[in-house]
Image (cartoon, rainbow, N blue to C red; front, top):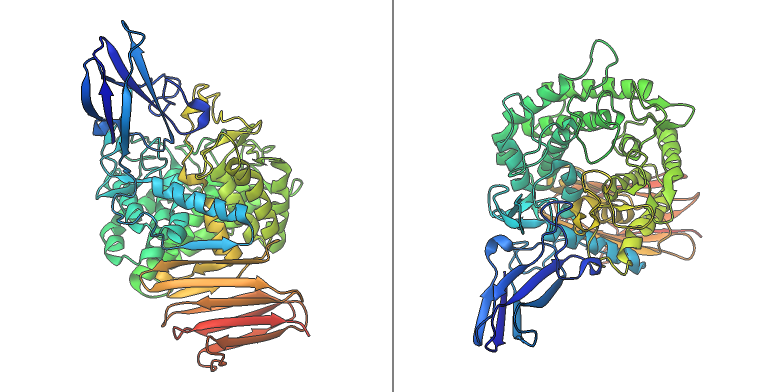
Length: 598
């Protein structure tokens, strides 16, 4: 809502116009495109043809998400000398509607690299702007815009972008939800976004590709992303009521997607609903879709065991066996030993080595072994440019969504320096762009540095349609917390946790997040002798493991905040020539691990 207070003289046929833009590039008398690509949405107007003091309040449906620039202008038909004095402008923020304090993030990150710090918070802030009131989704209209559609249940819903589409897209949530957890901790918006997809699940078990009012269909990959999102939400929240209420629907969804696997032949999934994140060369025995199914099966295994409060439940055993068979089939049919990369498809497009499939293969554990993962990580750099990774499956384009998967893959392969290099190239380029926002992450851009993402197709050569606050590009927020700081939950709500920092080229880093069990925090500083000092605190009653790389005969000590060495019932240390592993049954104390070389 905008409220304008103004004083006007006596004039005839004069209107005050309001136009909106996310970036400096489209500041002007016409708003950037938020409703339909390739259309001029223009401005909204209020008549000011009589003198006096007035206020104008925008209609709720004209809410404009993500804008940073408001242009006010006069339209006069009879009196070119007409003037309007604007006394005040009031803005009501609609995003994060359930928050009483918009600065109350439950997670944080800090390092000695200010650019990385800015990028982490750009992802966090983007996700905050993507948490919208449930009744402020986007309708498609022929003039202006209308953001008064219901997009889900409850008060707040995580959508794809602040400006557009203002709808739930489960694929986007594959990056957005983990980043939201480690930064702003907004699990309510994630839950409601997942719930609406289950509410619209088909009788055959399929999920739509997007939530209402769009309800786009025909995507096997987004169907699986919704199932993976269910795992992520339960991992973070431990909301057993939510899981129990939807479990039969989850089983139906698994039955639906696994029925597309050729179990008597290739062993691969055939994607018959090929729509995806924007890539070309879709459908069939698509490698990325098969990697997603592998992840769906392995996360489903965890859900089945958590739900039954046991290990190796019948359902989990079945899915784990199916995952193993699928992994073998992917590596048999979809990997090129010549290129050292995964192909686009087992049956066609074998000369295309896509960014998404190769990133997923490493990230999700499809790659056969550490050597193959390392080689794929190296091979992905062949598509790099000075401003990011070009996606071969969407030519001449940088996708922050797929690049978010790639930087995680590099970390899984043990190469944090490579991941940080790409973060600085891509997200750093946008963070410092004079016509960017400097505070959010973009949907996508061209390798020539223009904002014309998908211009040749769906976006109809309208670069102003691109979203500049799009949560699917918030991957660095996750990477910097879970891989660089090295802090992550390994079981529901962090009952078990893991700290394994990857230093890259940084001197120090720290971060933390909060679950229903309490606060988790870790911080490390590298020493001049090549060692490191790691301090961490986790909730009492949890257990976890700290893994640190060492070189040769390192001296390792563990102490609590009061300088005491914890007993063996609390901390157990095992050490090899390459790493030290510390098992911890947390008492609620803060611990300091020091690795030094004498």
